[in-house]
Amino acid sequence: MAAQKESGRVLVVDDQGTSRLKMTLAVKTLGHVAEAAEQGAAALELLQTQPFDLVLLDIVMPQMDGFEVLARMKADKHLRDIPVIVISSLDDDMASVVRAIELGAEDFLPKAFDPVLLRARVNACLEKKRLRDLEVEYLQQVERLTDAAAILEAGSCNPGRLGLQEVAARDDALGRLARVFVGMAEQVYQRELRLRQNIRTLKGSLVLLAVGALWGLIAPLARMVAIEDAHPFGLALWINGLGAVVCLGLSMARGRLPGFSLALARYLLAWALLGGVIGHTLIYWVAEKLPASLISIVIVLEGFMVFAFAALMRIEQPNAKRLVGLGLGLCAILLIIIPGGNGDHLANWGWLLVAMAIPLVYAIEDIMFASDVLDGVDRVAAVGLMMALATLLLLPIVVLSDDYLPLGLAPGGLELAVLLIAGANVLGGVLLLYLVATTGSVFASQNAYAITLSGIAWSMLLLGEQLSAWTWLSLGLMVVGLILVEPKHQAEGSDPSLPARTASGAAPSEPIA
Image 1 (cartoon, rainbow, N blue to C red):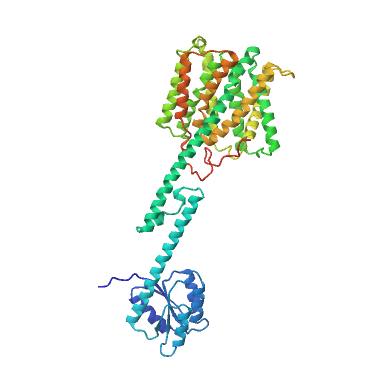
Image 2: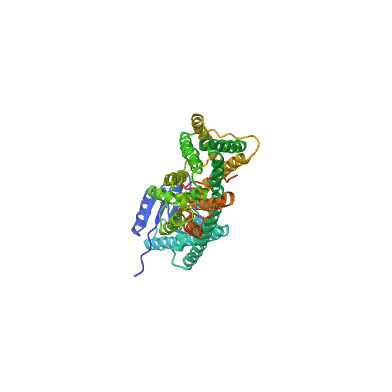
């Protein structure tokens, strides 16, 4: 027994109701779906709105005859491949049949058709249409494979963007080729992801070390200023005021000052109070009581505090590698404080506890930077606005406490130290914002390790402070811990063909000037 043919959708077009009904019933008897139209215009409208596999078209019709319908179908790229069988009186109208065949009709049937002949010609046309559809689909998928090759050649290797899932699902040679193609693209894509991550990690590490070198300079310089004349509030006022003038001046010259928004204002005010007032005052205050190298060592606790905050707030996902890295940092701290050469300074535990508030302030700042409030805001302008608000907050405190730090017009040692601290604060703050936006708050918090290394080096160079062999061993552990704490997972999984993203998922703001 012959295999049953697949059913198709057939449109019967005939102006005579009896002939139309007879043809429609005959098509349905063959197991196909049949629709009917009594005019040529109605038939064309149905063809534009519904899918059909075959048209049985009467030639002689009023208003729009079968020839015009056939001509319009063959002129339409969406309809030209639908086979047409014309219906005619074979004995009286052979010339019309010949003309219809020349216009593109597949075959013809007489008005008084034989059911066997109808079945043969309808099924033959439907089979031809099915094969044509398969051919078109095959060619489209070949074209899709060619387009995917062009996408890869242009440098985008993300397999999900190649659109080859349907082609790869085929069980023929084209499907096997598509699967090989997708597999090769996946390998290239994964290599690019790893390369991109390595580059971003290296870039982030270099920026992190730069931030550490800048901010590591602050503790020994603050110690030098405090030894000469201790004015923590006055020094904080000068630092924030000078930084605000420089940053806002640059931002105004570049036209990068942001518009006012209540959310941004609240954010900058909190940042100014936390970092510009409390953070600066703490480090200048503690610098009078503790050696700069010990302050630098305590600052490394920032990384542990940020990791704890970020894990609790689910900003970053903890993993074993990061825990090991942070654990090595903790071991490094213990090696420095307990058996190191700074033991004579640990008698004053009160000041040591005050100093531990410094990394706490830095840690809260890092978590704040992970929000999306600063997305699209120029980093230099953000730092400048924060320092301007901090200056306004510090001014009444300095007046009431009479803690003003007098600076001369002639650049002496005190003036030079203040200028250096202000410059380190500004540049370090801008770089830190960039670091958080590109690598995440946990990775950026590892600048505490770099600050510790830099602070110790600057303390030895500028103040002649010495460290024990235990301290040098601990520094090696810090470096290993820094390597183990990598940028956030989002950076690891980013598409190499897309721009880098910020911690909140938005595109980062413009490059640092």
